[in-house]
Length: 312
Image (cartoon, rainbow, N blue to C red; front, side, top):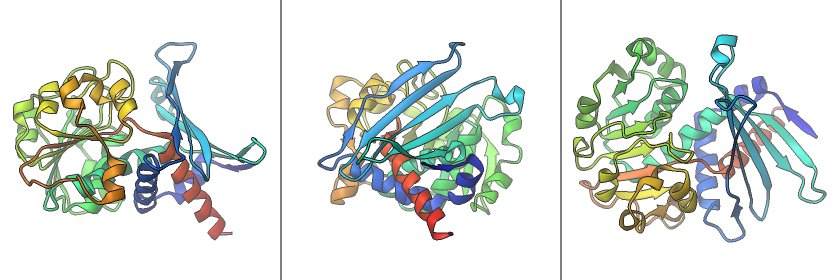
């Protein structure tokens, strides 16, 4: 069995790798022979300590990712989020590879939103509004700045002190020259070409009529029943896309969509595979819900293995 530590996987991953892996995963999700199993959501002995298990298989590979969220970890000097990816040897059923992937998971999650934005956002999008100022928000902004001409980031956060140093942290991920400032929710939505929500919210973060025509919205915080970041009224007038429709309707953002709105929901993989059905109207509002699928973890794990092997 091969083992790659958190330190080694963090040194091997980057935004370019994550983007290609996410794109591959989203297309594989709609390919014949792929199976994505229902997510398992659990908690530790203390119910506030939560974990999820997401698994899947294709004709070529199979495995799973265990992701955990322990909110008290910062008091111990540890990150709240951790992740471990397991790849199986499909000939004998043993675990072939184990990768600690806490930092990798941040890249992988942001990459899915970047892939969606590459076909759903207006190509001239320059103003990005992000709800949330935690670790994931920074990765989201850096990933989007790679594929869109982002010049301004408006950060909506309950703790305005977290905005300090945001630009420097983006520059550390290769997204330099971007103006960053705190903004109120309505101001941020009114100015944004792209809106990203990266929070654990359980109620809408803004009003539907604050979002202007032509905006692309990426919601990545909802990954369990009851979580919600977007107003349902927005879903009624937007074009809806996601990574996995049945999961998005169950634990993702579109659990809050009406039957009429969700009837038109499309898997992003179909758009990527055919090159059709993405943004066709500059005035359209597009929404991408990323509740996270195992194939994203498996494809980036395989990419990390390939890069590690190339360095041997």
